[in-house]
Length: 271
Image 1 (cartoon, rainbow, N blue to C red):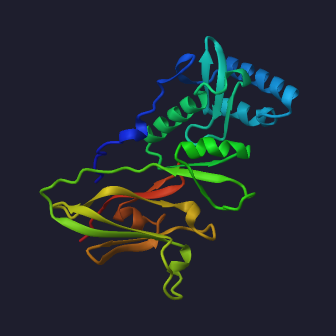
Image 2 (cartoon, rainbow, N blue to C red):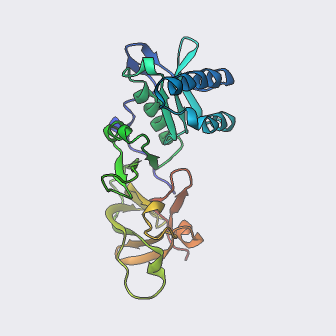
Image 3 (cartoon, rainbow, N blue to C red):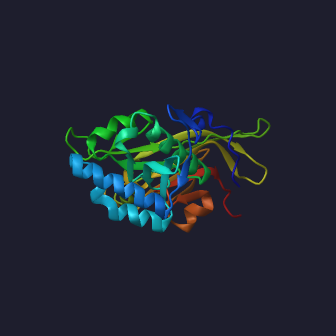
């Protein structure tokens, strides 16, 4: 079973109704007319400054075909554009409309879509590098190459917390995520990350967790399969690759959109 969300608090305080100097900004799915207008000002900006996303126009065109191209309009004209439903591949604001909160509005809409669609992680690559300060302000943290001149990859994890009934017995739950090599039988392998948390034990044996536990596939050091180990009151419920049916039966769910696995509740073993 899956517990219900308790609350999101500030994480959804900024929604589509973000206000700037130009009034309410509504983020909408782009049309063919929007695409033509966006490509027009991207081409002009590239001709004037040699910068921008004109060189990525094929990606932008493809996004319209796949239904993940979003815009903000002023009147009938698109003045900001984003490729990607959740973590954006491209964000661009028309040169004469910058510093008006349009980028914030695009991100607020992305965040709301991610929450609505149960996405757990937003991952981006900052290009140009100067965009990193914007994403850092929105709660993203670097991962991967952390060198001064390395490629800037960053992500934001979207946590969930749950209300556990006060009248159920408590359980001590430990969930660790490991590299694939932990299953090779060649000695003990340390966890990539380990979570210890409280759970509530129901009559059917399921353990409701106080918060969602998330394992990130990008954290497997050799790019192989992520392994999960779930223990309840010191007893191992499962220790296997997170993608295996055994893990799914223990309560592990795969987040294909966010590149992660997550657990909201530990399911009881058969028998």
